[in-house]
Image 1 (cartoon, rainbow, N blue to C red):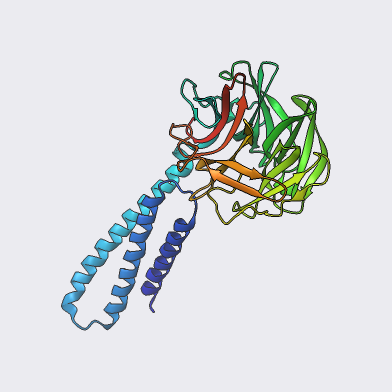
Image 2: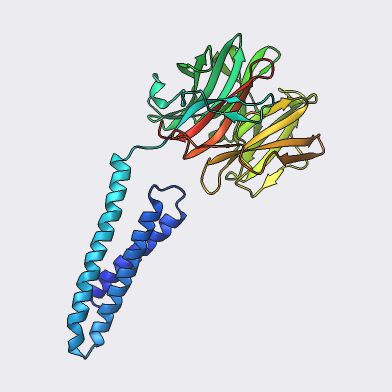
Length: 377
């Protein structure tokens, strides 16, 4: 193999590896265009390598001029293809507007908490720009509490300086206009998904604390501020998006483990007592579409609704709703509410992703929901 053959062969391998990388990389803007360019570069380099090999054994000189012309043409196309790919990558990395996670408000269109719309709201109501005490890359994972005619929204604010999530707080008197307050919980490790709930007139939170392989319980000493660690409920796994609720004199806890495709269920007779994994747990395995929890569990007219974020073909693209039809310490059954997603982003601010809903009852079966979405706010 001469030097020219070797050069074409190296380019051929590089373009092939780049193409394979793009095929398996989950999220790349202009992905199809770049893959097409990589395929062109791959094919051209393969042809050039073959031509160079052929030339070494070619004895018919009259074909050399044609081969040289074709080689020059192919090199020109190769340069154009690589320039196009490079231009797209540079534009995406340095000049294109970046999609980001932000938070909006939806309202219920029925007396049941199963039909929501973002009409009449100027969404998103909260973005990273409003976070004033840290440099935030995005806001997501909202949880709503309605107390004393005030709406409280707890959410993840991703701190770009520490490269980890903190728990932020925003308030509203009308659910339309929101005022950011401050970071209310910050740990040396990543926090997200602040599942907040009320028990015996006190407020508790179970945020995601996957970084320490535990599900940790916090309590507000002066709601909505002054959160302090109470105890570890369960430990030993990479627990994600922990969702707790109380039903039939028992505490229940959904959590996802093992790369977003295993949904586990725990229960306890006491919030501060011993937690036991359900005998049918994991209740779902190997299904990225419906495994990972996507918001607080709602109990309405003795019916139980759970929500799941869809993580395939890409992370957090929509939300599904399920009704739990049988929940005991020995059994578990659920059914999908509809064959269509419960939530999917159609507006500019959430068109590229939506993975969380927090439903909050106001009065007389009126409901609102905080939704996070990925797009261009």
